[in-house]
Length: 349
Image 1: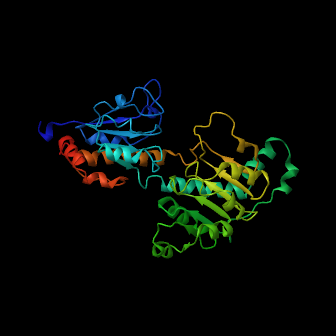
Image 2: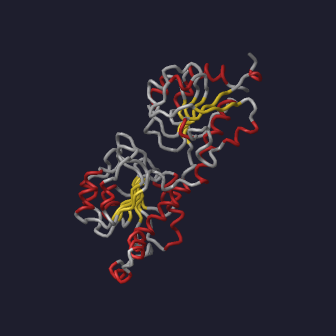
Image 3: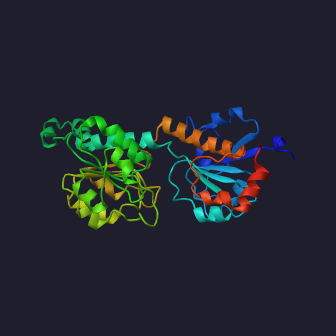
């Protein structure tokens, strides 16, 4: 078959759609395919916690929202060229298994930076101004109790960023107008000259935990970062400091954080991610007035889903046309003969 006669098939996991087949989200990038008649897209008919290879069928690309991708998922990968993670985290994907199966893993790099950074700023303000508590006082008719909840400004306070990737950098930029101190960052993989140009001080984790008024986590979850923030690190925090986690559950030791909050050793926390997601019953952290919680969706906006979708779909367009997309995690797969042969056979141009 001539390349011009080929069709490149993309499948979306079932959690992009309602049970009646209607899209669950307002936008997730489908317009990218409008000018690509040789690219056809479908959706998995059912949503499973782990992708079954039978669901993939003859798709050359799969865009994945929440299901896990395991070695079993890519066990029939003769025609599967890429897994596109609808996001930037990929701890739910067996990267080594993808590489061994000659399947590229692509993330929506850069698409979430603004939204997560903006949500983090919102949480910083909500924590320091006791938004949750003051809302409750009015709902309960307890007006006079307001004198017990004096807030604090962000001015002259210090941000500590754990993981200075795109989100961390966007956060630093958004906070420039608040009159805060020079930010601190812990990132052992970062070139010190990069952060110096941003006016950020690169420090060790212990120094960051002890100096920061806000510890905001933006690193990936892997074996090196699992329980990175434990009892020892939490004990270094100032009593009026806050911990914010919009990255992944498991980076923070939840037992240690629970005990820290129960004892009142820090001012509070805001948590968007947890060990054992999804959370289907009331979480123990809900007992704390000084804690804000969200179901791994605090940064979900129409704009973020639009950008993640466009980025993910454009990755499939690039691969279909023989171009290397941005955001490939397992870049070594590009050099594998099996991948090269498959790519040459499946691309449409």
